Length: 218
Image (cartoon, rainbow, N blue to C red; front, side, top):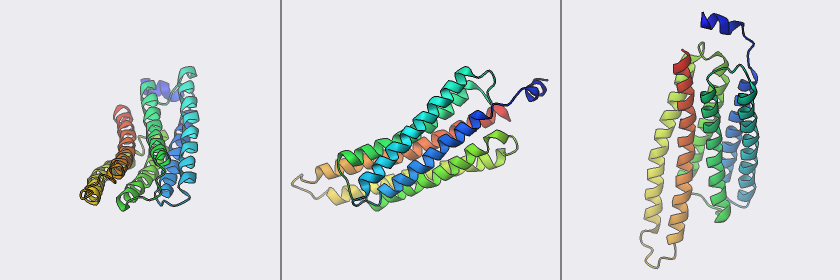
């Protein structure tokens, strides 16, 4: 009876448009992150692009949260909408934190494992955009949605391995530095790895939020 009544109510499609726009900023942020990992003189430009995309994401997030307050009808539970929005925003916030570290320490060279982590971020971005685009018809698309979120979880597991390998290589690079002159290099490199790994964690948080919505609506 309740589902029949809800079917008669007007749809709030604006939320899905905003979710799509928010997810798109993650893709652009991840692509800029990958460009940043190529290093060189263009690094500051890529850092600024990440910051710009983060500001764009903030604008979308504010619009979503305003829409939650003003809308009588929402596509799913308000707390889930807020949770998904916050998870999307946390993901690109983590990209911005990475860019800030790079800008602060004027880093221009990046290790291969760092680039591989950025590659995973790009993959997670593409999967997230597709998953969010399927939410308007989540019952119809639940199998594909489950597959997409599982793929993100697998990529997160791969990122843990890359992080460990990268930190090991960083340690080996600096372990024989008896003068202590390159100790700062180890600390800064470790901070970059930490931020990159957390970006993938945040993508998994988005996937978990989507799974939570699926569980409640199937």
